View 1 (tube, rainbow, N blue to C red):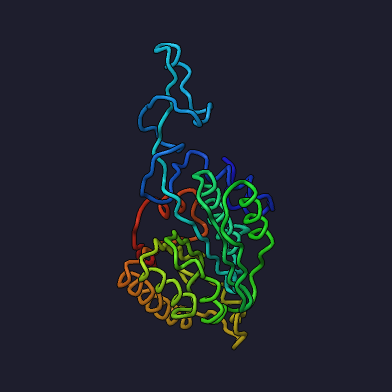
View 2: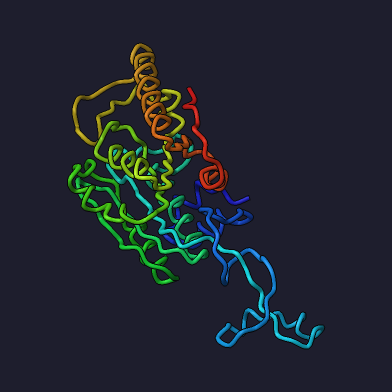
Length: 297
């Protein structure tokens, strides 16, 4: 079997990774149905002028000697927005495979974009990076998918989150119903990003958060022989001896307990996952189950 971590780490072709991750994965981002040319068969109806010929059921026509069109139910056109935390802390690598949190997040969001494109939804991207927010406006179609994948491919992790005013201006889509998928590590909480995400949920948008961590971050499994510095603020140099590990785990547990509590209070599903997990499994859970995942220690 192809190793997902190695594939993600060693290719810049997100299309290849998408095909691998989505193989056998059920599609669907949101509910809310409307009739038309969709993906889920509903019923037949008589052909009417203006209908697309590709929707005619030719086998049924041969039996009935009349033209019938396959009517389908499809997801209503709710715009899908992808929000990526590309700050410096997302450069954190796995200790067991050549993979960073940013690389993993890019793949997961690329898969959501591909599903949105197949559904016929408009989708856009907001990248929070280096105190700026880079926005790819929402649009539909294969060309839009290529624009979003290109932006994800060239995104590198750097700096800190943009300020509240910058994010508010960037999340201009809040006036229309949207499905918002936010991927990051949420080490900075509360933050301008967390406030923006919670505000969107209070405005009744379908917001889902994916909190990505490494196994070492969850278990405190850092090499005590190395020195570590905060990648975003550059404050202090730390070594990870046994005494530091115990304090780290206590502080970490308290931090993410507050994150999960705030999300629950605002009815915002947050999935906590390790980047060592298979991307397909994480994506399936994120798309299909509104869960609050307990942070594992």
